[in-house]
Length: 178
Image (cartoon, rainbow, N blue to C red; front, top):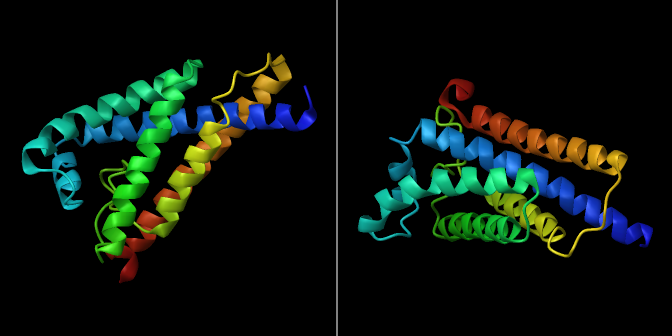
């Protein structure tokens, strides 16, 4: 296997770990703050009213299940579902930004921190979906050092995404504006 192919495969594995952690954290946060989730989903104004509560009940379960499946290395269904979720969320945000509704909460988790949608989140989701697609081809057998490197990179990507999301939410908070 060529070095470039090996690097792409390792990048795909790192992305699976990062997105798995990201979905796991978001799903758990959404479950913890499940009373707020129907309102967050309703704010997007994309679903009929009768589907909002079922979507709010299902979303955290799907995110946790997808995250766990990505972390344990199942493939390709978790990658396909992860890509679909990321692109669905990106499309929902983009539609609302284009409607002039960039002030609504993204619903990315962190129930105590409101985080308005914006193009950076749309781009982040598209980039994570593209990275996750690298995991779709049959992966090569990785050595222990490759697996450790991919794990470290995946954790670093997930932590950076969460850090930037939290910093953006804090910067947009009313307490920061005073």
